Length: 219
Image 1: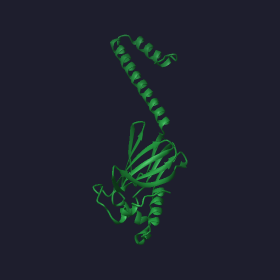
Image 2: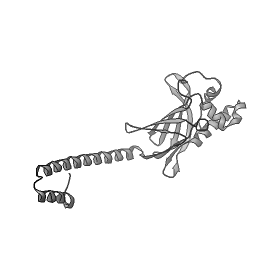
Image 3: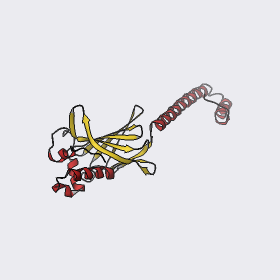
Image 4: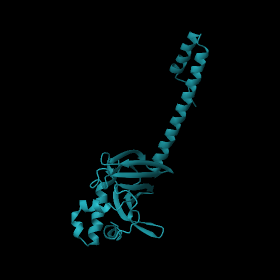
């Protein structure tokens, strides 16, 4: 377990950086990196309240190890990435560095795994009934955004891995092209029928050719 000593600052020496965020909102950027999933989390100052609510004994502790263990366990319990029936292993919780400035309320979580299809995020739900956790998943230069809340702590996704995303996107694109072509074809057929509205037999033959011709190809 890896953890930054700066977590102590989060509880005892707030710097004022990032406090513009609402107390009941947190933000999570998620990205697959080789065989790891990286989560960049940005918390408001009120994350302190969530941790003390979960581990009240921390209020009187001055031990860095106590805070390290408690925060890691809190993240492990409340933030999960799942791949089917398996939960990805959380291996790192560390302070995030931005340029040369340290933000005590910004952290990186690292999970072992190369794919996930479910996100459970109940972080800070133990202190705010109206908590909202905002997510932005980057896959193949596309962004998937969603929010978890106490009423809906779990988001089930269609496969999130680089290869599966590309395949899924390719299939969606082909499906869209097919539907577009089919719509244009039927529109053209409808116009033909209207123009030949005095030829009732032709209308029947046209629809029969569309429905029954099994050898018809759109390629």
